[in-house]
Structure formats: structure tokens, C-alpha cells
Amino acid sequence: MLKFGIVVFPGSNCDHDCYHTIKHVLGHDARFVWHEETDISDYDCIIIPGGFSYGDYLRTGSIASLSPIMKSVSEYASAGGAVIGICNGFQVLVEAGLLPGSLIKNASLKFICKWVYLKLENNDTLFTSNMNKGDVLRIPVAHGEGNYFCTAEDLKELESNGQVVFRYSSPAGEVTEEANPNGSLNNIAGISNKEGNVLGMMPHPERCSEGIMGGEDGRAIFESLISNLHQKGRVKKEA
View (cartoon, rainbow, N blue to C red):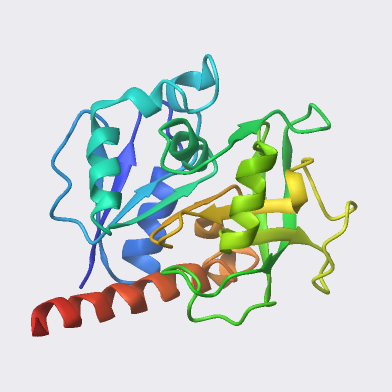
């Protein structure tokens, strides 16, 4: 059984969704980790959930990025640990410098809450290796500042390194302006670090990991992660 640490900031509100998915849907150990804690070495994966950390004051995720736990998360990721940031968690990761770019207000200047389609662009990460490149997932979004933006230099590097993991698309996998819900550059919905062990994404896979929620495409992301963590554990044990 794997052990997942779910970081809780003041204002987090998707932590229980992640807990339910990991523990009750997928059958693994899940623990809440208060943002003032600094020892996360005992976890197989760290999840930074969605919500409104610190009320989204200043820039979204900016205050949370300064919490004591984030230095530990950065060190954990640098050592190869698996980290996934969802929605506000993605915002925290970019503010903390674990991923490039920033998340700004949606192009519509309105909060968006709806189902969208994501085209898988890179299946060579901890979170996507059980899927095929080009697969289309139906996953909900719920954000006001999910418009991914970065410099031209960073964008070129992301694209050339294959760090763009998900793009907003049509149900058929066509990457179009109409399929982009928030104005993100190049329809970017999720990116990874160069090593592929840190993923940030705006859509909510934890909200669609069982049929009763209206869809379960998000489950594939967690199942890929679990498969890879088990493999890493076997390799580590054999070594």
C-alpha cells in the first residue's frame, strides 16, 4: 500500500476530494499534511490540492508558496519524489518555482466550472504512462485564474522538452481556440518538470475518478502514478 500526503493550507477545499479518491476509490493510505509541517520524507507522493489557499489574496498560490512545507516539497521533488498540484495546487507549484510560468485570470474574466476535454501530449511521465499519446480525457475545471502564461523562451523550452502534458481539446482531440476555456497559451492545461515527476494541472482528476461523479477519466492519471510508484518501490527494494 502506498502512502499519499495531501497538503492542507488555510483555504484548501479539495483536500477531502483527493483523500476520498486515494483512500476509498483506489485503496491506498492517505494522510492530511498541515502546511506548517516540514517532514514529508515518509510519503510516496505529495498532492497539493485545489481550493483558495489563503483566500487567494495577492496572486493565487503566492502566500501558500511561502509556507514552511513548500521548501520540503521542493527538496522532495528535487530528489525524485512524485508531486502533483491540482488547480490551486498548480498555482502554488508555479509560485514556488517548481514549474515555470504563471496562472492569470481567465480570458473571460469569469469563474469557469464545467467539463472539458484534454488531449494527452506526453505519456512519458509518472502520471501518464498507462495511457497512450493522443488519448482524450473528459475532466472538469473550476477556476477563475487558470489562464496559463509564460515567456516565449519558457514556452519554447516546454514544447521542445515535451513538458506540455495536457492540452484543452475538442472531444475528437482537436486543439482549437473554441476548446480552450480560459485563454491558456497553446491550450496548455497541464505541464510537468523536465524529469516528469512533478505535474501541475488545472482540471480536477480527483472529481472524476468514479462513475457516480459523472465520469472516471481522472482515475487513469492516479492509476498511472500508482503503477509507477509500485515499480519504483520494487527497484528500490531490489537495489
